[in-house]
Image (cartoon, rainbow, N blue to C red; front, side):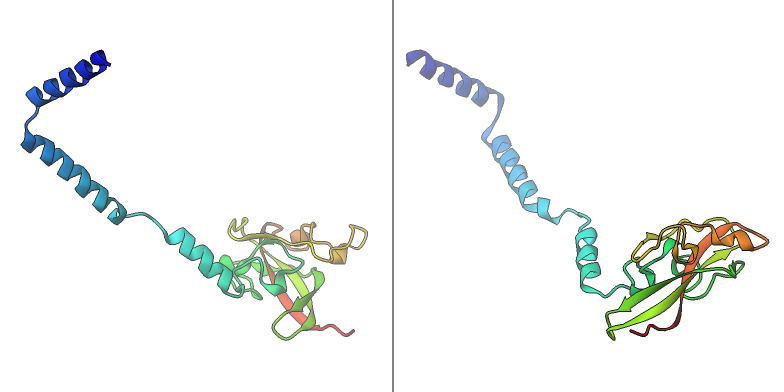
Length: 171
């Protein structure tokens, strides 16, 4: 026990010789101030707020969860300079399309939707969306979204896809 007491006495006397009370108080004050200021540092908390905001809103035409996109496969034209139902400038809609039947939760009705590829520019690369609800096997190409529907155009470069409502589905 005596050696432990001597060790603490020796180390505290050594510390007292090297430091003054003022420097100890200054260091202690700096640590306390730094600890109090730490929560005020700029931290990006926008991601959490944006995630909460996204969950609370209904999906928009720029979102893959939008009801009209139930059978789409490709880049959304609403993010590429067009709208959900019109191609961006400099592109043209393919004359051949695939179709799907999507349920609109707002009015509770089912709609027949035509999906058109917009052709003429290289791929947009924004807002990729691949939903395969009610997709039929390849032997029903008019209901399959895995084909390059721009093959009927003079310029077969795929840019993005739009969804056009053709009518209300009858039960």
